Length: 139
Image (tube, rainbow, N blue to C red; front, side, top):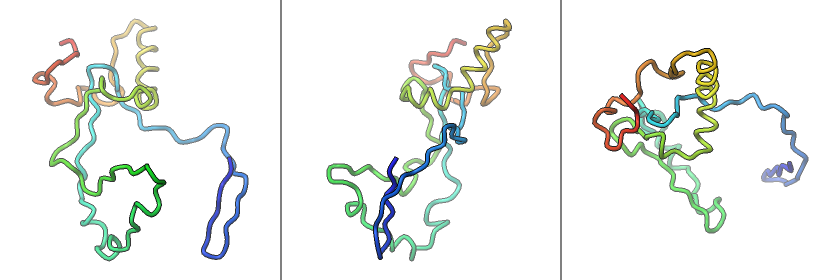
């Protein structure tokens, strides 16, 4: 990996170091089909925790994103409640990374003849499970 260091006085490149075994792990959830992924509504808005003076100093995104690439940045939470997403619509890569512990627990419990159990919550994280259209979880 090559790293570019840039300061107002100079710019240089160097070889970066990547650990063989990173110590970061994605948060773990039960992302099996029929469950939900819940993102809680933030307790504070950006304005609550950041001075207006700091927000006024923001650099225009068009100046630092490459041409043709401009992600939509969420500067304010778009909902007045938690974001609840059925796991069936999550990208497979997200399910693999954030559902690894659940898969391991499921395999171990099955090997010992035990019923599956969520690693995240005792009950479903979806308070609307019974009323959600196309519910795939068997009751």
